[in-house]
Image (cartoon, rainbow, N blue to C red):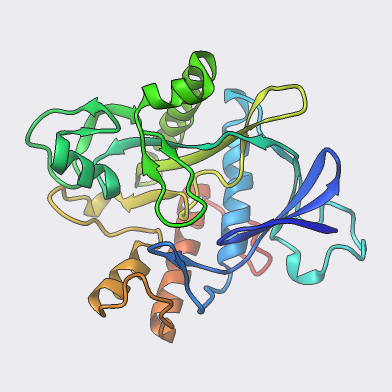
Length: 288
């Protein structure tokens, strides 16, 4: 199959003019740098969790998933065995050039923006909030996609100017609906969904369609509810553990080699996120 794109974690292959195969690797990036040390099973966790979440979100609007696991058929020579549990057959979309972020808690770049301006992406927030505080209500805080380096937070009005009022309104509504559903389900499993990043695209008929990964530890901040304490960084099930290790060792923004204990601790955090959210056991294929 023809390689269409290679990202920080995934490769995208052309199946035919309307279908693509999305394959998740074990690569991990931090501070916009792909690290040389893979995290075993990470790609399978991201794939399996995306499949599970799309099942929970099916009534909220169309998504890109067509088939899972060995979607081209068992024994198809184009599907190498290492891809098993990592490959999703998906509708081909024309991606919208905006990262759709929903925040229910103040963290990350949202916290940085709030400290500087009292707002996040133009959404004014109450004074006196702390790092990790729950917001009065979830907010839509979009960002422009960057080919390299950090995405740039922008206002809703900037999205409307770029894509038109109707598309901007639908992106906001769909993003907040997914966040609210995800936050509710996660809360029932003792997990705080602090924020999440979604991607949408247009299918052949021009229908806005949810794409890429959904509500995974790579695209979301998941915190154990029992240890949530506003006022600083939170323990998490996402790759913040790797970021923190890099920062402590003065290697943030570098292609540092992770030690074995950090690799295994990160792997276990991804697997725990999958098992706690889904209630399913994680096996060696990455499917519950």
